[in-house]
Length: 269
Image 1 (cartoon, rainbow, N blue to C red):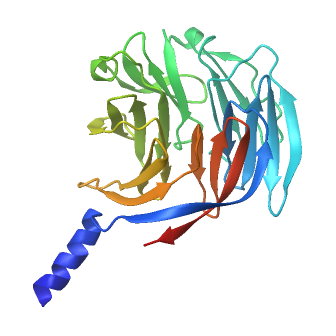
Image 2: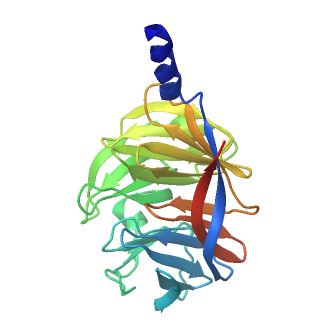
């Protein structure tokens, strides 16, 4: 009997008893948004054309602030730090930071002026006020401090650029940096920029929650435990037409072409 109990818990740890859950919406914000993000206080940020709007969602979603970006066209937006929102314009190689009232903090920051030849992706790092930049021109990964000085550098990332599509998403969480390479997988680095492994997947978007890497493929999201096995532990069925997603402590958010909808998952057998 002891070996059966051991086998049962080993299988759970390996994720072979994957669970399936169904999404139940509770509210939505209508609009054709290109990007969205959630901060640690549950404030929702959306980008519509050249305007960023901030909503605070409790029982009802209330518009709190908005700001015009004018000629700035974001290719990504991140509000994971509670005191600022990072917005990146890939076409112009420019980043901007906004505080939690959507007031511009530093104005436009040109990454080319910081010696970065072709910034492809930018994301927050949780070590101080630093950011990660993926430089496609020189095939390197950089961490910059608040003065735009290079404090970490990983070179010769040819493996990330050896297919027909360049990396499309980058996020840092729980001491790991994840870079999504479409049709290939997720490149995993530690917080010092050291490459760990490539996790093969056909996912179109990624996110994280606790110690899980979340992978969107078609109308499903798989939760992969970030351990030595990296097996699928949970699987979630999601609405049709999801462009992006975010798992928070109390809500799950989905960006579709006409709205941001949020709610929760209910487990099913």
